[in-house]
Amino acid sequence: MTEMNHLKRQENENLLEWKIRLCSRKDEYGLTWDQIKNIINNETGDNFGESAYRKWFTNFKQGVEYAKSKNLNEHTLNELRIKELEIEKERKKLQAEKAEINKWLREQCRTENFYEKLMLAIENKKNIKIPNYKIEYKQNEIDPVVAIADIHYGKEIKIFGLEDEILNEYNVEIFEKRMWDLLNKIVTKLERDNLKHLNLFNLSDSIDGILRMSQLQSLQLGITDSIIGFAEFMTVWLNELSKYTYIDYYSCQGNHNEVRPLGSKSGEFPHENTERIITWYLKGMLRDNPNIKIHDNKNLVYVDVLGTKILATHGQDERNLEQSVKDYMLVYNKPIHILLTGHLHNSHNKTVAKQGLRNIEFVQCPSICGIDDYSLKLKKTANAGATMFLIEKGLGKTTTYDFKLV
Image (cartoon, one colour):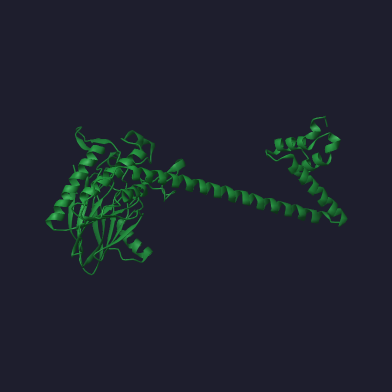
């Protein structure tokens, strides 16, 4: 071996044998422990100090001397090595656990910091003028339900027909126009029947999000601006509606509201959904309004309306709504009279069974957005709209209103 080669790990040596040779012949090679540290770290990629190798070799020598004094055979030495590896494994497990804990703490701190800043923005925001009176709601024989779905706030589209006629145009301004039109239609029906309570379901996809890179071409606003813009508008809209009726507001979680970090796929982060932020914002802004109750955001919303059990969900996971009604009842062992969904941007209702005078049915609601490029690709079209129906005690869903919004 040349002067330098004798310090290198030889072909017939494993890592342990090489480290033992370097340390045991340190003086012969004219090496210091600091030099040994550098040589081994360069080979292994570790970053241990010289004392680590010095103590390790001291322990090794003591083990060898102990083995000799007890006349231990090779098998016993292997057992000692196995124990050494087990200790090392436990050390690595502790390091991995510590790394996971630190990762979790970072995520928790990041989330809490975001919500704290958002709450601070709510608290510092100029409060809207809420009604100075409380609507006295007394439960009667009829209770109305309104469902809105697939708003896709922030999306900007213009869909043309075969002769270049506009089939649907949509942007933030048109969304606001449609929502004020919807408010007028709702109030008209409520006042006609002298109803002072409303169950309002937002079936999600409130913002368009970014599920595919192609969506960047149709976004009028980014995700953050969409969340803020939609939440601020709905605060004003709900506040105005609450001047005429008491509102129970429910919201689901949709696929376009999903946050998909690092190229993840649908459903991989089920709790990362911006609809939760929107609902949380509404709850904070409208907390002093006595005529509104903002319920917690959920993926599945189960509500009893005059004895009629409604299960609301966005619908992205439903392949067969008729079968879904039955499956949900079996899975959760709860009665379901109406499965309320959106997602497909068109209306579809069907009775699948009955229970007494109540039908068991699914109600698929239209979208506020209306036909878009994806709908056109699937050759599925429907007018923009919303659904309102009346629940009668003992009868379930009776009168239905299909609101068209232009």
